[in-house]
Amino acid sequence: MKGFIKVLTTAIIGGLIVLGGQKLLTQNDQKETKPLTFQQNNSPVEPRAIFTSSVENESGLPDLKKAAAKTVHAVVYIQTEFTRKSSVYDQYFSIDDFFGRRSPSILKASGSGVIISSDGYIVTNNHVVQEADKITITLNDKRSYNAKVIGTNPETDLALLKIDAKGLEFVKFGNSDQLQVGDWVLAVGNPFNLTSTVTAGIISAKARNINILGSNSAIESFLQTDAVVNPGNSGGALVDTKGNLVGINAAIASRTGSYIGYSFAIPVSIVKKVVTDLKEFGTVQRAYIGITIKEVNSELAKELQLDSIEGVYVQSVLDQGAGYNAGLEAGNVILSLNNTPVNSTSLLLEKIGLHRPGDKIKLKVIQDKKVRNIDVVLTNKYGTTELEKASEIEVSAKIGAEFANVPKSIMQDLGITHGIQITKIQNGVLKTAGIRPGFIILKIGNTKIYDKKDIKNALINKKGGILIEGIYPNGIRAYYGIGL
Image 1 (cartoon, rainbow, N blue to C red):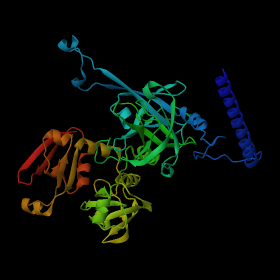
Image 2: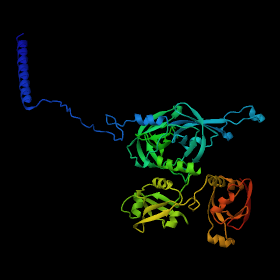
Image 3: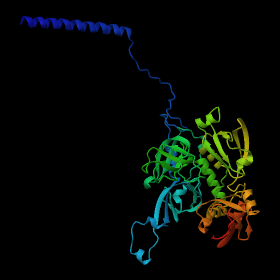
Image 4: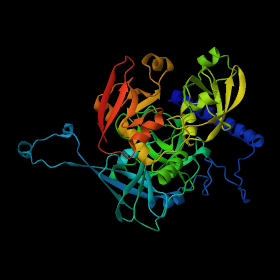
């Protein structure tokens, strides 16, 4: 008992010593440390914006409600019907197959479109309405109209439609050139048949080439955004925070068929050019510079002894093309077009695609290790500055071939004084007739052929059968009948 009392007494004394020391230390700290206070500034202070935008709310974030409200009534739901054209789509057989009473199957698809004028002009993707037999437009207020196709352009994946209506709400064109990476945008469309859907994101990149249009002459200079886009959004609007149209949604990067992070839109700069041409001519007036190009990388810059990695490298120059006539040479590096720097092939093609044949552009190039300014008069694919009509384009599509002047050496060997040589054949009446590449067309009907324009003039507005006379480089003459 005495031992226990001794231990208890010792513990109590130790505890008192500790408490006393702690109190002493606390008093010293209070003497040295000022108390924390929270000051309130009653004077107005501008909030620090995390995101910059032309339209902001009190929090500094972009106010997207007005842009959405301006856009949803101008974005339409497109339903298309087209006839099955191949038995490869067949999955089932019916008794009609055996008795020849089989009726054509009607396939349906859907997408989006954007009203761009109060009198019913609508822009959408070419792939939304391609080969459609019937196009039905449903407005946001559920009114429906049948649409007619004013024109299409597969090279940019755009199409212009028209409905018979007045006083429609429409989206005004914005400026895609002024967009910067990080700018806020809205995607408006009808994904998965969910009408009037709005998603938000930012511009992730510009002048993207994703090789989706499948043509050497295609113009791919997409705006990349992380706004959610899914099947059904094709042809819908991409708008800025003011509700102005800056792009037409066209594609997504996906391994599943649905959105996984990035989507792509056609810049409104291209849309305006295509729409204007389709309205005026029924076809797009495509300008060409007549060169093959590739981007400058570090390895090429070192090889060319360039001071910086910039510009687009000219691999080759086509004979008698716009670039050739202006003095461009293989090995040149194009630095800018009309004072706009071009550091990618997609951007250069986009800028050229905004022009028509006959337009003059100014290039800044490195030639012979010197910076030079070169003026180039752009041409059409035939090498002239003439503008084409829709009927002429239709003839070109039916022909399905590319042409070039006959080399002088071959003309001398064959003893001919005129003709145009076929360099490439695609699907069309010439391929169907059995004509092969290399064939030199001397005469179509009663018209002698001296240049590419003669071919077009000989076939335009022609219907029925017509005889083509020519010769192959090996000296074999041939005659082919084609139907138009």
